[in-house]
Length: 359
Ligand SMILES: *[C@@H]1O[C@H](CO)[C@@H](O)[C@H](O)[C@H]1NC(C)=O
Ligand SMILES: [Ca+2]
Image 1 (spheres, rainbow, N blue to C red):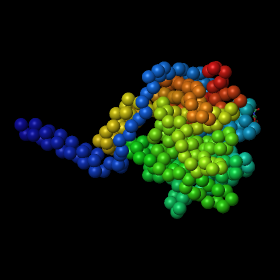
Image 2: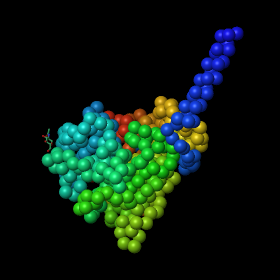
Image 3: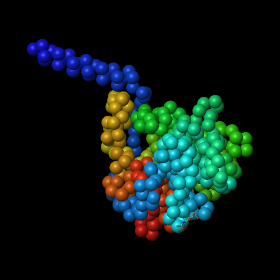
Image 4: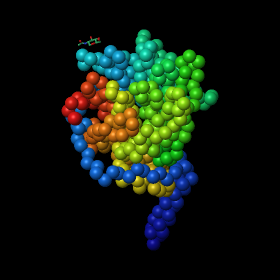
């Protein structure tokens, strides 16, 4: 009898403790989120399973990829390196920035400098000789925390996204669970060395790129399954409209293709799980308290999808690895001389896919 009583008390106290922990010490104050409906005629293909693996085992989760004018592929890996892949297939450990896993989007500017987003330091420049300088570190006195992706406009200014002003890289799941728009688009002016706020209130601001005619910038909001168009020129300058919404996934990086269309990597959260998660604040509190549980159900590391979108915002092509057989958690897709190059936060290689194999 005493034993049963003790068990009951233990169970009750445990439930109370967990409830208290979940409701009062939860790191998030979540919103309910409506996810876009899955299109009825959705049959995945397996095109992405045809990738050739470049630098396998040596490139730790290369989140972003960038090709310079000479055809040298650049990427930032989780071990803090900027690595380059030469046309002859040689892989070069070019520059070690630090020992952290915080380097994300990168570009080479027209001057030949490499600029990379660091989720702790802001925008970092590495010049041709390998000298490292911090470019944008603060906005109005506040440290820039979660710089995600960057693009150079024709006037030399750098536009970059901040995924979240509330949560850091290693808490990105909390930003998704909270489902509140903590993202920003910032601009760094190299002539004045000033950083200014361009757009606020974005839902996990992620990939950025600029149209071929330099008329508009596109910024993707992972949380809202959409990308916005921000006009850069003439009378529409500063206006914002939807570029594409109801995407079949959460957009990560976006890249201009040579023909003026865009390639977007779409993170594949398990949509049935996420619909359930985003419908309940209590579930969100529980998952925020037990991140391993969220890892189990999120699904992004179990499949991959990339899409090609016209400059008018319509989907032209969709390529999948529906069960993550060869690639998964694909975060960027770059088209260069008839091939696609895929970065990922799961794979330890860059995927190369000849486009002729998918037409
Ligand atoms: C490949 O190209 C790079 C850069 O031009 C060069 O440093 C390297 O020696 C070349 N490797 C081979 C095997 O040809
Ligand atoms: Ca990104």
